[in-house]
Length: 75
Length: 156
Image 1: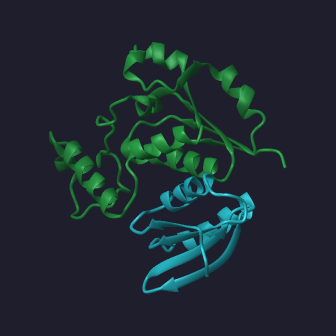
Image 2: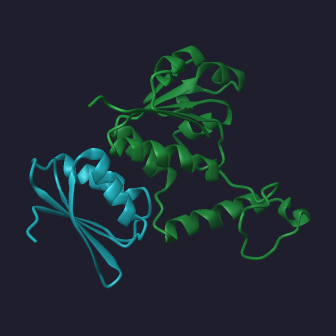
């Protein structure tokens, strides 16, 4: 999947993946896609909850070798 | 959609109890909440420029997981508090948990408003110059002005 920006949250624990995802989205334009990489298993549910509450669209969640990859489309 | 609001009252000044207000505030701000934290009593310690005195003690804290069981008589020895604090900070860093300083900065960046209880600042004779700059001073009434309209209000 194509994306416009990548944010690697590997090694970070709650709440950093969410708080910094929000920061990464700030300077992006509506409709652009942010790829987030996280090693925190808690971020799977948190990222969905973040999307639900902020209106950004979580396009996909995948796991590759212990890393979680999220594609977040900015509202 | 109207902006949701959250208010937190932070009353504790130990390392373990410093985390919940900053974690919840930074997360809520990331979710789009308008957030205020009211720091009172020992919570005021969390507003110091220098947070190195924010410590954790195993003493009278039986729920704290310890690598080896430690009798209370040992916990009370000089230096145990500093050692426990150092170990806890190492553990936090190893697990990728942000430092208090970083979380506090993230809160400020996200426009979380910090209010220091004027009464307890006076009571403990705190020097305001020891606190960070982004602090407003006020009392309970000022806090209720915001808290009364919040969706979430927590006492930590």
